[in-house]
Length: 155
Image 1 (cartoon, rainbow, N blue to C red):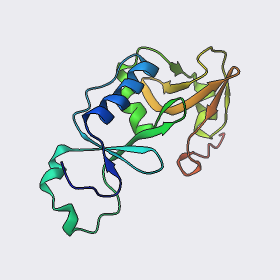
Image 2 (cartoon, helix red, strand yellow; image 1 turned 90 degrees about the horizontal axis):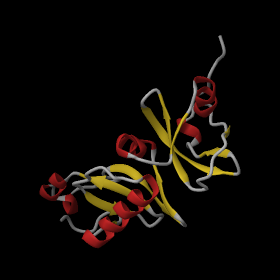
Image 3 (cartoon, rainbow, N blue to C red; image 1 turned 30 degrees about the vertical axis):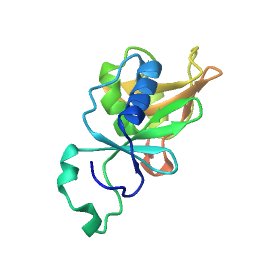
Image 4 (cartoon, rainbow, N blue to C red; image 1 turned 60 degrees about the vertical axis):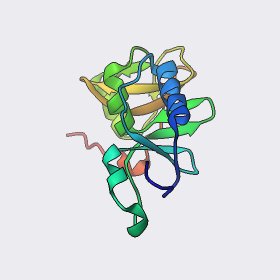
């Protein structure tokens, strides 16, 4: 395992904790044979094991890995990329949007949707996965960062 850089490299106990949170929330977790890097703000990145062959201490590294999600009070919030990894194996807490709802989602709007989870759900449309929402009070709260939202023009 590489030296400490840009955060804390999680040991097997820390990795099992993250995978356990994913399994608890979505009913399954993909095989994640990676190093896990946790930043101070709770963001978790996965890094290919080949990184152990790279002399990181000799390089000026700003970031490393793929952003999987963030540890938050009450669970784990998947990133868009994290939802694309977990979504295909998830057995629960996946909300499929119709075309009208999906257009609103892309714009960053919240979606009225009855449900009972109260936690994080994966957003899906036409077999693709588009990140996470918090499902509260019959509403999907859009957590997509502003810079990743799309301005949709009606034709």
